[in-house]
Image 1 (tube, rainbow, N blue to C red):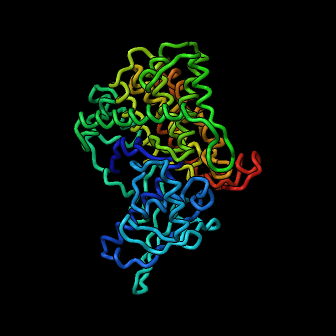
Image 2 (cartoon, rainbow, N blue to C red):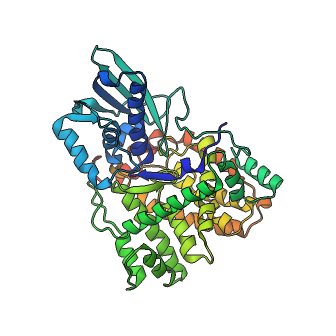
Length: 472
């Protein structure tokens, strides 16, 4: 089994969904790259894209259609200005033209060339896509891609199309491996990850990348707490982070992000206030995510608020939390995500929301425990506790939008992570009855048993009884 860098699990993305937005965006680019490699690019006459399963059933609400158009256009989701997206999409739809990879224009009718097959699910994965290129001589080139969650894309022949899978000196494919290596080397989990990440980059480069992620996290939360109004999509969900931030600051003034953080640190530190700040951080991120904003995918976009909320909790409210602690937090969180990806799933379309909020809560619990001085056993215990109390969590987004119950669910996942860490830090892991590997296995078995209507299809649960509205 190949190892996965933690920066594949925690990376800069764009909302509202890593599996339904980022995955199809990447797949669109991969298809054009494949055509170019075969010297077919200049011969393209038309392109048809078919979405299946969960991608079809909740694709419009998740922005799958827009992601595909932008991916075909050659846009980069890590650098595009989110504010320009509506106009770019409008131009393609109104002109019935698309500029492939920004250099070859072809006819593209939105309602004819982009098809959502809601009654068909491909057997390999619930998030399936088929791309068909009609060449000038009548030849049809077809390729299928699957969005596995977290921005990972695969074909049936290749389980992952990422270029960063390697064999590390201390493979950590399960919790037992992690404990074995840490005990043998006499080091912490984050020290172990530092060693393995050298398979991709130097320690200094790892720290630099972690700082970039941390910068993006702070910027996203800061943007989120300064935006008002309702979220796009038709549900008219009101943004709440702005009002909560203003209330909690109690009149404190600031002019930039650093002053804002200092104002939080110097304010009320009662349990109730800290609890509300954690919710505020999580809400801010996921309100940005729901608005096609730039977020840090950790390990998915639907669960992008948990890691920032817990990390900012630690940064603002625990003593002596340095930038090195931030790096070790992200390293530990990323490692836990790889365990779930390799042995279960991080895709709600495959496992329900336990695979997204559950995994992110498990990541955050382990990371916080590592930074607060927990032993390797306690770190894994915290991860287990957090996931144990998310088992069976369904994914039932109302109207196919990543808003209800997704936004509040991030706040709950963050609070559970902090609680799990507190329990683990006061416990002896040798007395634990359930290991992290046990709970990962159980999560995957639960995912396989879960009915498909509770796996990001908007066909069950809250999606059909709470709000009388069809998918937007």
